[in-house]
Image (cartoon, rainbow, N blue to C red; front, top):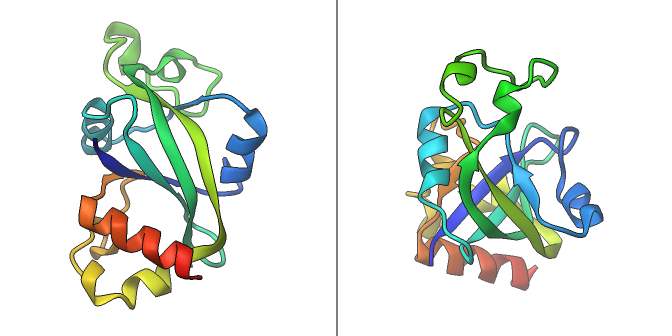
Length: 153
């Protein structure tokens, strides 16, 4: 099983938006090759943290489950979509997406400050200087530590 972190600005798409859908939702619009490659490594049943970024208090707010392995991201070929990439017209498999489903909302978010304050998470990719990827791998140890922080809140 793999563990991941999915970042989204809550003003664009929040965990509450995913909860309201009541069904798996495509994680589309990723336009970074490294993040795309991470999604191509995902398998159904993998788990992920849902992270609210670019907000007053960035935090892991809950969990999702990957329900569908990667497939072509149709938003890249839609000129009316803000994730449009004209290169995808000639290469429909240039960009990928996966489907994720709501799993759990944490009663108290695990804030970025709290993550940074945990010495055992010092090597976590999310905490690396300059890291702006919207999809990141999480180690099993990091997964366990963060779940512990979420449940200790």
